[in-house]
Length: 428
Picture 1 (cartoon, one colour):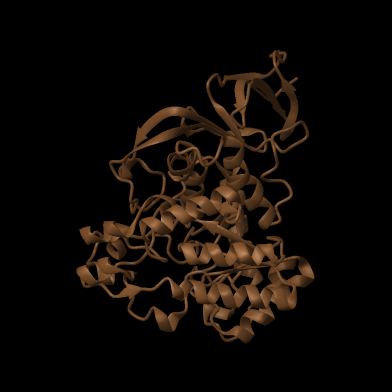
Picture 2: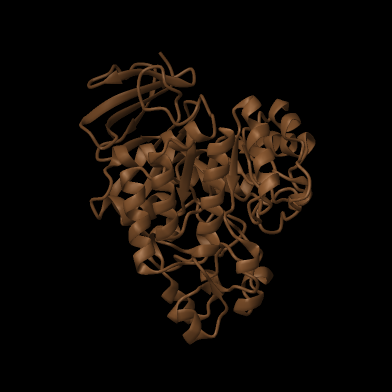
């Protein structure tokens, strides 16, 4: 016998049991397993979840290694409990050809801390004018199945229809950044009384909702798979709920920060709170939590968006939008969803691991912890608290909105393919 024996873990928050990891998978489960020949980890009081899967991560490499690299980003991912991340395509050069997605995939393999699945661009250069090499990226070593122009909306209806039709051939999905550009020219924050009071150009909810409504109709028309990135409004949840009731093949994600933070934070004029889409109202936050709880929203995705100091610490209007998310995501989900009684730990596993893996078509990730499942898991101490210190984060950037905040839950260990990447809260 060899490998790791995890003793007394509460799988999905249930009764304590033991798990034996060997040869990259879970080979035994049950109380009182034999420890002979295995390294033992005492997991008493810890909750075991399948390794987390992020559908929406910006690793910035190639092109903006001053903000993040595949290595630093996957360090942050492992410390946050993630065993797989989807690296978004808005790099420089854009990931719109097989060569770039294979480069990102190989960098992830070399880092060895987290499985990196590149997202391919929908259009060449994210310009919205010509379809990218979708088939070539799907056939590459990176095996791309998720395509997105995230950071920009595929606002041309003909282009969106063609993309939805094209990816059907290899069971791909188009992940839409829902933002009608003509309704958000110069927009700086959520359109509300707060934007009027603060003198910041408003970003109306309808700019998101109109694109989602159009795209669910297109997906239904062509029978394609549609995924909605970073849903942020109550109206968006209602549109997606109605589309699912009609049988449209649509899925959706919400970010941790949209589950917790609200538009009032813009009153500080601190650009750490500037994000795309913007922080919304308290009513929107409640609707997002309810949508995640009832399954209308399928997944929590971090939209981890690191930025170099000079791009973020400037006046609000000039600052780049985006927040760090990988290392804090599970704690924020516990605070917003578990501690409020909206989800139990089995529900967290479903929304942060199982469903994201299914959407991304990752057969070796995000499965329920059972004998024969991949040895990808995270152990979290739900009773622990920790204070977010930007200087201690693994990311190359520091733009976290949670600086100085005490958060519940601490990732104690992360296992990737049966071997530890994190032990005792530190990189192994």
